[in-house]
Length: 322
Ligand SMILES: [Zn+2]
Image (tube, rainbow, N blue to C red; front, side, top):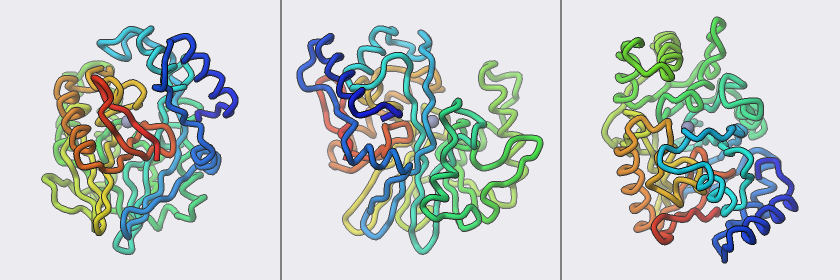
């Protein structure tokens, strides 16, 4: 995973296990199956009659920063990465938008980092992988946005000043609470770190006004896809329930980021959770639901192909890749 070879992964996992005295908590993510999905950059699976394709948009190899997790130390963070067999020199944050084929339409759930607009030099592979699965940009009928953080919306439009729509025919469905928060925000009243994003949102969404539709509640957005209001990470952050026949999938999106850190430790507060206490409450509630209902999940920042199941594990939870 993360462009490591399988051999590196096995060695690093074994070394981590030895150092930490672990006994079976090491998650081997580098299965042949995951490796193949990673190489091709996409992974297709079915939820009843609905076809879901996970599309790899690369990874942000985030430099360690003691402020990244508000209530965990750097040593704790590195130990948690090592315990999951991940590199410890940086925090690997992958991006995985999904394409959903339902009701004869192609629907995207989020749009990725926008070909180099955000996420660092190893991000921005979404459009390449979308083309690889045979989806042309003008064939996308609907885009459902989970929230307005840059790694989810930057793919909608090329960079300023060009500001060209990437998916010219798509209707864009956005959570009403998220739209209102950002569009009505007084830039100077926001923490400095959020101002560039708010400016960009207030610049780009009016340019797509004829295509943007707000949603709230849990009414079906496209056949088989319903929103689950999951606030905290951002004011209108939304997860999704996908169902067809007796099959279901919950798209956790950013309810929890990297499983090795925040599924394992649901009480850890990542710096970009806007309301950390609310985000934690939402996270625990949704994780408890997927455990109780034994539902398959996908997470936007889970290791590619980002699909699997969650179980209770001691004081936290564990993610098991499918
Ligand atoms: Zn995100």
